[in-house]
Length: 343
Image 1: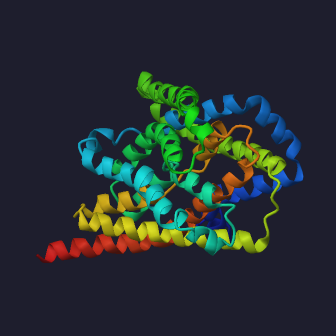
Image 2: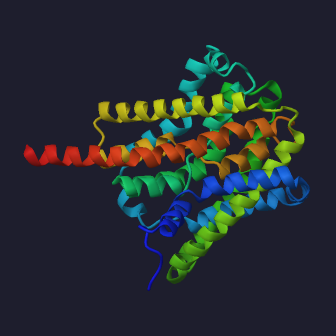
Image 3: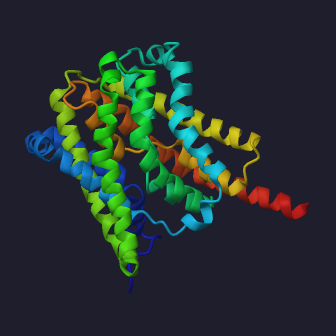
């Protein structure tokens, strides 16, 4: 009897839902926010700070740190990956698209110019990038360590990069206090979550498993709350044409990032498995943690809804594109292995 075979229609649907639960969940929470925003608004106003802290506690308690000992020796690799993700990509986009006005020309509006830069300043995701790296045959230890480092550096580097690239004078003046608030609400719960695993190592596997399930549920709740907040405070009515343009534009940007990172790691002669990991992890941006960081940095802003649009689109499309490119990355790895065997 057993479970459903993946070859059956039901099995295929279940497998697809497991892989793309975040896409399905995002769509459902957005529809719910349109239909019933009041509960989400109440939860956002009353429990926002608590939910943000709980989110990062669950991130810490669900991180698999078993690969740390093998991967920590590759310090230069981790610095390269974080530098690409947190500094190079937002910096390059700022110089070649934002400063030149190319983004506004392509999208036919400057409405998303600043929000796109802000979304690109966010750190990499914790779980999806690691999963994609494993499936593509990349170095999982590099992915795991950089996912963890990104959780720690992201809340610090993101506001600094935003301040350097697109922030106004008021943001600059309050940068120090914003970083302190982010540290208290994000880094401390993250550290507690990681410490929990090490304090009871015999239960670490169970803690990670249940924390991962709780994290997914909390992410969907957080998406619903932030959608409600954004819809209620945003005074912009997005047209279908604008939405399609944003999707196509950010899709093109992400493909360009993937190609750029793959080329750069090739020039630097990075090992193929690490090259795959850096390409996947370096190009990706978090959605749930980005919402939490932006909600803290721009609390009370009427533009919160617009700021969320690039985050949602980039993250959703990156998952689809990486799924498509996994087989290509696998082929690249196998091709290099065959070349080495023939030497």
